[in-house]
Image 1: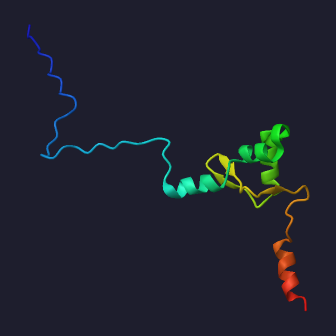
Image 2: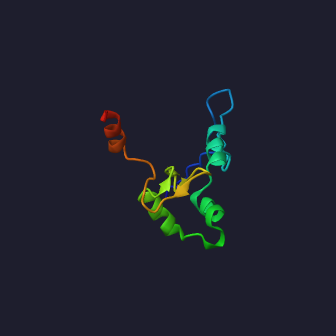
Length: 112
């Protein structure tokens, strides 16, 4: 019978072959860059806008998303990730955009 020796386990973490230390990357969650924080400062989430606009009688979130999709909030909301952001002066218009459409503006320029 031969006695087999178990292979020696490699050390963990493996030794580095460089003389300089390894660089470690640390991620900070929840810290916004200056450009991102300025967007969030000037544009509240749509739920906060609805709370400010309607108070306790604010519409359900699904209704707000339908308004955004149908273009009934002007100026239009911007989507960042999963959240819609609107300007503080945004308004709800039940008939859609309160301004003329692009075709109407182009035709208005052509008229004498």
